[in-house]
Image (cartoon, rainbow, N blue to C red):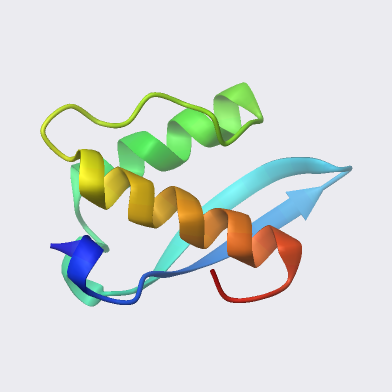
Amino acid sequence: MAANRHVRVRVTVAGGRYDRIELVEPSSLVSNRTFAALADRVVESQRLSVDAISSATITSMAVLKAVQGAVQGGSP
């Protein structure tokens, strides 16, 4: 569960817009569909206030916090 671990992401911003969000750690989430779906939601909507993934609310919140920290230039 990501909520109990440090989540790190790499966020690519192009033209002032989220272009790509990649999971750096934990490796257990790299191929996880939950992360991919959440990253897609953020890129499509261009905002962090997206709905959490059903049945993965805590993990969703950990990932969104990591994205916010990456964009702000620091750790969440």
